[in-house]
Length: 363
Image 1 (tube, rainbow, N blue to C red):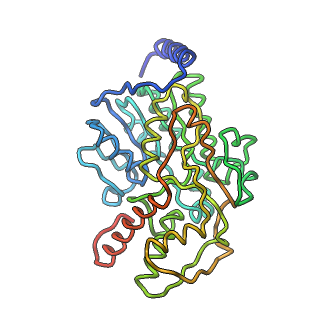
Image 2 (cartoon, rainbow, N blue to C red):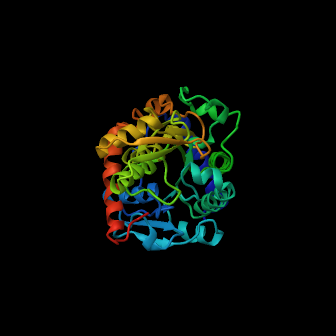
Image 3 (cartoon, rainbow, N blue to C red):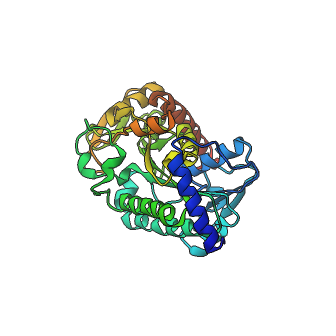
């Protein structure tokens, strides 16, 4: 642990640096510095682990509470640990020697899971509380927290033809119950660890991330994966029907996984975004009915549609305003939804066929 006087000097120096710079910093981390990634057995953190390994980083510690065989991706050469980061001792062990810490660990899933298991979602506050303190005590230079668009005021999302949400729309706070409030409070932790203790933090509000190596079955999957799977099932069984949660008019923006991990890297190392929540999402607004149509086109099938109006469906409309990320980074997620969905569909179809053949699959 750094001495208190060293911490105070560091805080002063970091504040001066932010005051004098309004630009994206060159990445200062060396290839042999230790990167810690929480939640690496899951979809996004698993992709982030592979992303850094592909860049040549040689010391990556990946942590998830699931047994290793249940991880969506296991990257060769990475130190992979099975620990529950909601426990203080596990967080301390995870962060030992870390130069950078990426906390993407959380108990979450699609809307069906979020609405049904609010307590489990809220308990993820324990993960961030222990991880950010452990990272600070370990002397980590940067800390990333994966927030969510669920932190936004739900009263602004009552119309499918919604206006895109700006970062300032999180206040006055009226988050989605459970999951959204956990994200909002964890954002505050990141802001205060910078303001009071001088540890650089980064906060990205994810907007519906999708892609290969993600949950596609079992109740935690999100709309692109769930609907792709339903189309694949309908084709396979010959029962050419599909049930849609809600009336299909709900709208969302969906961000492809490759854009997400690139955005995480850029946001983490942007000096002009320290302790500043920012949208990380596509601005391409998609209606659920259109998503079904795209999946049908990819699958080469036309299905009879039914609608479960009592099923969890979330807010009526949500889109990402990318003004800030374009201004700060000169970049935004760009993968067209149809292109990303085609890749996701192909991967899920292979998983589906592998499962039928008795092979082990990731979801």
